[in-house]
Amino acid sequence: MVVMFRLHVFCLAMAAAFIPFAAHAQQATLLVDVDHRPQISLDGPWHYIPDPYREGWGPNPDHASLHGYAANAHYVPGGPLIQYDFARSPTLNVPGDWNSQKDSLFYYEGLLWYQRDFTYHPKPHTHVFIHFGAANYAASIFVNGQHVCDHEGGYTPFDCEISGIAKDGENFIVAAVDNTRAVERVPTVRLDWWNYGGLTRPVSLIEVPDTYIDDYSLQLERGTQDRLEGYVHVAGADAGTQVTLGIPGLHIEKEAVTDTNGRASFSFAAAGLALWSPEHPRLYAVALHAGSDRLNDEIGFRTIEVQGDRIRLNGKPVFLRGISFHDEAPFRSGRAWSDKDASTLLGWAQELHCNFVRMAHYPHTENEYRLADKLGLMVWSEIPVYWGIDWTSPRTLEVAKHQLWEMIRRDHNHAAVILWSMSNETPESPERNAFIHELVVEARREDPTRLITSAIVTHFKGTTATLDDPLGQDLDVLGYNEYIGWYMGDAKTIPDYTWQNPMGKPVIMSEFGADAKAGLHGPATDKFTEEYQDSVYRQQFQMLDKIPFLRGMTPWVLMDFRSPMRQLPGIQDNYNRKGLVSNKGEKKQAFNTLRDYYAKMQK
Ligand code: GCU
Image 1: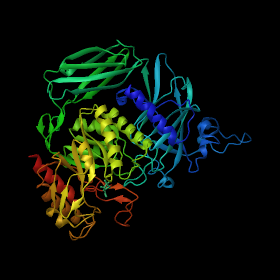
Image 2: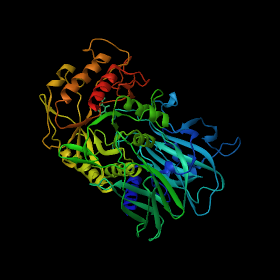
Image 3: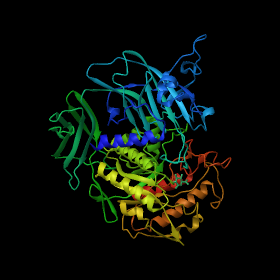
Image 4: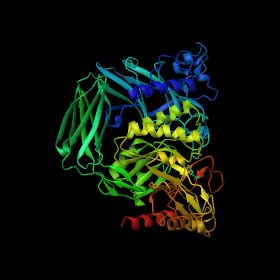
């Protein structure tokens, strides 16, 4: 019931903010593990029409599908007056953001309409969904002129059912995507990354039988090293529907039946189980059967918990040698989405001897999580509750909760994910504390097996930082960001700083670093030179080594990334240059310095 209640509440909030939608639009849902289902890809060129004046909604947004661009009308010389025609319009590639594909759209923020035709042949006893990997920021989807669903949140997937709407033969889809920044949105108006708009991740058709598995979870039972527990949810199933769960690698075949909510629960011994860890990222093939539906996955089993100020992986203390990164494509910039993007980014993290990555500041493309499972990279995953969110708006809270729900729903079977982060650098206030408290409650309800954290701004009295932000009370692990040597003081002062941890919780230094233009060399006292960045890292290590409760770090940042906040000509040119690698793949001095530091730590 939680699921349906969550979707219903969310839609009410949605309707209030975006464009009043025709009542018959149904909720977007989220199918788990779709990338293991057969898919009909809708990727490739889609026609597009930028719509800064929001003309495409037509005279009455409620009937956009009749009089607006969603009707997909075609201009015929001598015919009725039509002032748009997708078939005559240019195209954008999907997946992909629009800003990095067209110079004319480089700075574009607003509404843009996508359209493409597709052929489909409905099958009996079959549901068909359109699956969107992500659409930044808000999207309204129309098929054959009918409004099928809406979604808000630019970094999480959604599925829209089009059974009975998709007809036999030729069909068309129109997607209105709007990346306008707004106070009540998540993230809100100020952010230090490029607000890439569009259908930024793969789009496909997914077919499932009458009753189908839309969610499941299988994890190592806490406090054990050889018992597994979980559930399988079968949409549309009557109570008593049989579900089979198999793990051939452990010679396990278990059966259970669904309850009145369509949920079948499992708990069983798993003798001989090899635990997942960075050193041994063992994954097991898992096969699920319910009625005529089949779903396979590859899952690792591990426990992650906190004891005092220590983080324990599979019961043993672990230090998180990490790096932060944005979901931006190496070399070509723009939103990352391909397996190549994922292997380049995580490949660099491995070169640094990392066992951990912070995916900032929003859920990244799912193929990065899959690869992290395989490579043995633990993951910090975050929702974009970033800087000054509208804490007092119930609608904003609903949107943030929904993004959190979608992040957990999509990624809760990835062993690599050990931390859910609720926010980044949010200014302390009672409203903020209450807002994030609600998120923490939601996260613990949705997934009681992982650790909860946030990245908090460090405040200093002189050269002492006391990690007492009240937000920490709600968290398992405290993430603190500090820029000593860059935004405050210079590099040589860094070792003078000391840290107090009154809450006695594990601490991760979730950001530190300095900008450097690759290839710019000079005295280590000159900001933006590689030498300066390198000296900041060397001094940071001296300070960090002295912090007894430090359990990890994720320096800012793996690769230079685009941001309209960074305008220094010849040096920044729309890029945050705190990368250890430039956007063109050039490794800076500090890359080797961090690599050697982690190599020594790893021994
Ligand atoms: C902040 C913030 C990042 C930003 C970084 C910077 O801490 O969390 O998103 O890019 O600092 O200033 O470079």
